[in-house]
Length: 414
Image (cartoon, rainbow, N blue to C red; front, side, top):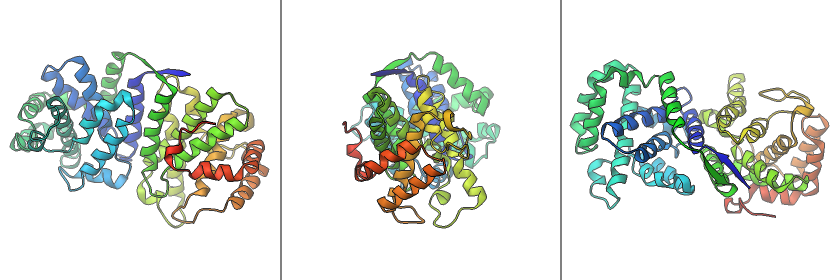
């Protein structure tokens, strides 16, 4: 089975997910992509290299899940520990063949030019990594030092980067940035609506590619690992939900290709949690109403991210519906009974079972018999599908194993 999706759309969706980590500081990756592309065009790079540098800009912070780490990235020109997210992001991208070429660029995008020049990496990789670094720090400076005052940034950028030419940044790249910076249009284009128009134009020039299910799983797994890394309490949550949801689909008698899609939805269901500040997600005590509202928004954000990928329309809905209930009391759409497809009902049960099987800041893992009793109660209250809860009750031990198995068992068949 294969699903045709536009790789550029998929990259944009991942960029949207990464934007959520900044909570209110959105579109950082998109602005970095724009700055890098404009510098590359000034230097006469070919279309393939421009495509690559755009994707690298959009995804350069894919190793960042924590809002606290994002604050460091937004507020410091250079800081100790910056390499950790570079390595994490490169490791993720290396696992997905269509984007694996970005891995070394992301790995070195916080390495100083004078250090890159002395390493054994290919010159074109060094140049691309350093361009992402320069674009990244340009956007960070515009935000935290000049507080979005782009015209002031235009006047001061030479003072900021010229002294770093040849040490932190390549002289050629600094020159290209300063040449672009002379234009007011360059800075105006970084405003939100103009960045989105820029991305639309770039997308129109990119052809769709067909991904087999194995590739699509790996791409979804990148999303899942970014989300699950946000908290030590949610490590492998999405992976466990995906495993369990797939098996529940099989026990329900759904065809293999539908079980594949359920697994993808399970991997993607919590994308919106990237927007939740760390201190709320890991709060050991009761949540305030405002904090609960922040958490409840996550499934809507999941839908918004995934709905932009043609070919994943149904998967996006199943993922977004995982907190809906049969009686209409769920969120964020308040759907009822027949409005909830079987796939969404399966993911809802798998999500609750897996979450209860893991430790949380406010409790220890729940015993499997207690989980069964809780699911039975939710089914009696017409929150969960009684038939799916019954499948869990008939396979309790296997469900527990699937929910908390090591990640290497993610793609186990049968």
